[in-house]
Image 1 (cartoon, rainbow, N blue to C red):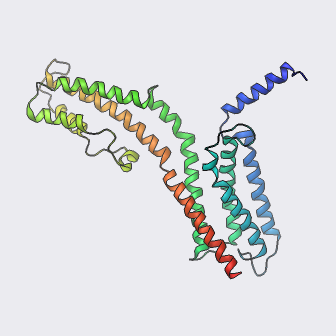
Image 2: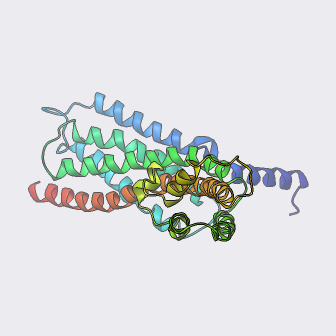
Length: 293
């Protein structure tokens, strides 16, 4: 049967709209609606069902919510495996990620109601605490992925990381030549700046943007303190001072890039290990429940 041109056009437009649609808004926020519905059912049933003497994780209702929560956690933890299999359609990576986010947030309600608000110093509470840590780190990840890519693009100014490094290298070649006539002390300052590894900084410096032992800043401070000649003269020190200023500006751009990238990635260093710890704690939780049942 021949296809209708108008139908092909509508299908193409829908696919294009889907391609530009974020995972949070995927399919008109389908998974948000599902997650909210699931939470409302859990809350309503919690208030409607009478458990004697009170709601707790060991009641039949607690076991029901616990089973739902456990299945959700195991399924949600498979996102990392799913990322390695790219495919369009109903269970595309975008759909899976959307479900991962909203059903993960729904776990806050389901798992809390499962506990019956009874927490103590035991493996059950450890599993609950780890689950909350995973969810909170994931929420941070969602926030930064929504806000920071635009900042990363604005900072890059249509330059790739490789182009930023090449621009810095070009300034360094000019600076090395301009520093030839300088005295020993001044040359050592410039050499120290040129030899310092741009990327040899810890996560703390990258996240805060504070580079306390930056040799470029130290050299620029030294040369900027000498105002015996007018700015713009052809003296070697003025050339070096101007080039050091350009070098610092280029370094600032690279460091802003590293900071934004670090903010985008640092949550994974909590989220992924905490997920494995959660699965281990859940295993201990389930085994202990069946052992004492």
